[in-house]
Length: 384
Image (cartoon, rainbow, N blue to C red; front, side, top):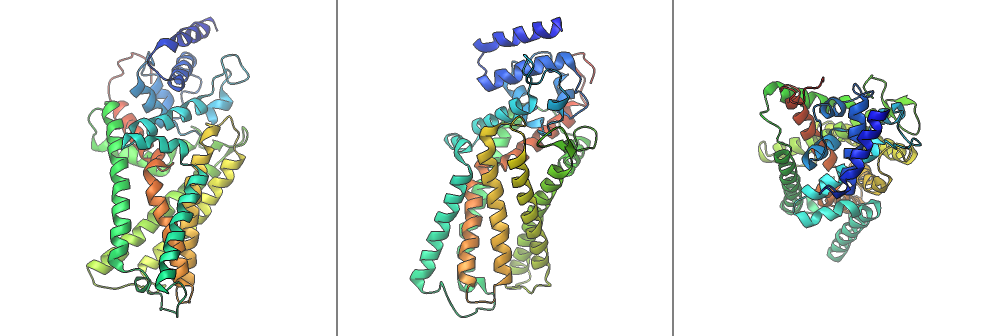
């Protein structure tokens, strides 16, 4: 107990350091956790913590924050959690620094402030604005309501127009994320990535290994009960998204390689992939939204709920409008449904680099850093 009190007093003195208030809180908490070690087996963040004797390096704090999966297990296991005087809340401290990471590494840098404003209201407003623009464009052309077009989307919006519009926005979004995570990767000085380390990091990321609470029982949501719901809904969201991306990729190959023009039949590979992925993107985001509303405010940063919900809402509406468009593509309402769907898709791409999507990219980089680091000598001289 005396040792922990001394550690806490040392951490409090760091108010004069160049670290932000949120980073100083993570440093304080990590000093206490490093002295206690009770939660060492919960996730990769804790053994990574034990390889450090001091926590005054911003890059280290960003790395540890993104390695944390916010499963909540450590909060309920900690004897120094609120209402204890030490007030140790690892999930909340890490969540605040994670958002700070996205803000500081954003490209272009001034756009980093969007992480603080890209909430549910802004996401929906962006989508509705784009939908209104597309609907007005169709209305001016007299094609908003039409005779059935046998599902031919390109009779409404030319193929090349869609490729230029959405391809350019998507590439800019990927570029912005890539530059940001490259800056993060360079600062955390990861070392040499071996094939074994890459394979392990990919396995851990794709399996969501660290959403199991360190014991396979899952996360804590509204209380200290363990559940696999959060892991399941994350899987449905991610793999639903990947199936939809695969659908678009296959359709692109059909169009440019085999000269097979859309629309494709319901039994075709692009439609099957898109349908299965779309269903996953309905159930997953709906489940995550439900969990987000029920989760204890102690689990993470309540100020980020709007950002979380904005991203989830866009994913849900992209999927819902896409499935509706597929079902009613042979009707007179196809152009209207297409405008609504494209508006949500464009809003998703526009906000992509500055939304909760970034957490998957930075967390994957942190997992790779850990897979590399654990294979290196422990210079702190402490047990892993």
